[in-house]
Length: 171
Figure: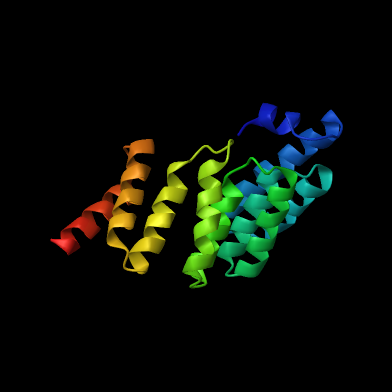
């Protein structure tokens, strides 16, 4: 995502959107440095200036790094309210549910992510759904999901490893 994408989202002045973008970028930098509390504060300031699905999703992602999965899920729900076409929060909710051991509950979230019209990483929910099926012992469905992930992104190393590991395990 770039400034132009950020600026066209929703209502608000150009100044509010630019301020939100600046906070978002700073938040991301702090998040990548592991400065999570500061990232949370900056994502909240971004949302306060101009709420976007990305800011809510990344705030949730930061909460997940902190082990605060319920709050991460809540932020993803906010993201979906702002932009139901944005795929990331659906996938992230599913991933957080996997972390909580709620495999069956995760499945519909990955399926919704796969249908999202605005998603830069459509291979992710296929891999994650494969992880669910693998944990449930549904090997053929897991293999199909990993293959779909690789069809969408042939260089997706996690999907390659998952598929190779599962096939070798079954042989």
